[in-house]
Length: 361
Image (cartoon, rainbow, N blue to C red):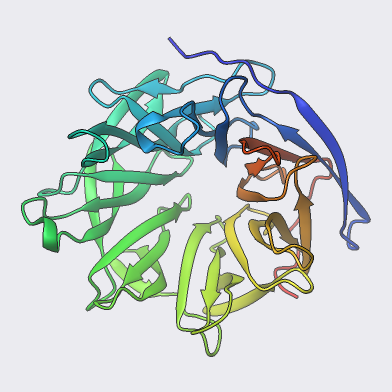
């Protein structure tokens, strides 16, 4: 049975500028849970069903995480459990209602070792997606409309000191090792499109991170802005546009779009110092977060038509972040209330697009 928990139904109307479409109106809804001081939303599908986690301990303990399913109009529920793995977390959900994440079990007394397995949540049950042969732990970060998931798995559980993680694809009961960029030591996949192309990061022997694409048995680097030394790809849409960040040797990262061999700078808030892109929909709208020029707290951001739009925070709150966006432009993430609580948030955009938006400044 799904765990039913009461939610806090706070809804705010907020405006932000978007000249190509007039004034953009969206509502900010607190999806937070009564009795739980920590929750977040990390994925959303085109039916506006979101997933994330709840931490009733109030201490950000992985061992206390419970995966959460936020369905409009009904109480928040747990999308599934896995026997022997009491803690769960959900990162992404497709339109069929399949969601993925991890299940965790303690292997000793806190803060002793833990072990996660990538899981698929379907109909109140978490299905173990397994690990790469020889590995012991895994996590799934994204799932496409066909039910193919990606994430990572370790590869050599017998040698903890030299146990790299590799980007992994989970499909049809099998775990496929997606490898690394030639010469690199480890990799992770964070997003996947409908054709099965994955994006994420590959790490060289010095642990330098580079955005990467995994497709057709090959791993290619997506590049960085001129002068930057690190990058990361967090998501990809069905038009082949990927998003993430690119960072210089010193200073803050900028949210970027990887498209057609180019790295497009999506910008920062005027006066801010950094931004990050976390997700992109099929119309080219990008969600993410960055700091503000007034207080330097992180705010959830929407990147569209060359603008960086501040999505705001809860009344009394200081920070927020955006983690996922659907094709309607609805966004989910989390934010604080100024009293030490973090709640899952949803920004519902009232405008709808019928064609691509401009991708860069």
